[in-house]
Image (cartoon, rainbow, N blue to C red; front, top):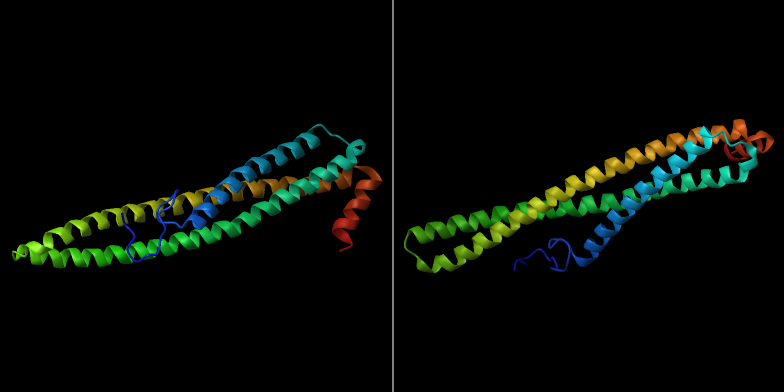
Length: 194
């Protein structure tokens, strides 16, 4: 089992992440998935209210929906901090694995030279080097794939939150323009007097 010098715990999830890092990774993906569903749901709710032209009789519901929409967008932005930390961890691991691959290749080449000169004591370490090199390359590939996935999830969530923000902005103006005096007062207190 590979554990040379990188201080990486072999515990569930990705072998190249500590249990705490694996936990953070899983938490990020769960939150991203939940927030993606939530932002789409909020956007559908807003569009439904505006399409059905529900006026001031539901003024309080409009305000609640508006606040929920803002909270969903804020939660999405908080997940970006998690994503940044995961990207930083992955980039660090990529660097570590790249360095280790270089070291292993150097050791492999030295042992191959010794073996070619008839040194039979180089055979066992050479096999261990090949095994570790293969596993390190596998980890390197996994890290690259994880970085690609993190970027894809971030892009998707960012698209969702941008769409939600557009809908929320329109909804804010809708409340101002369609919910009578209460809507105008709410808009002025919340967005103009500050």
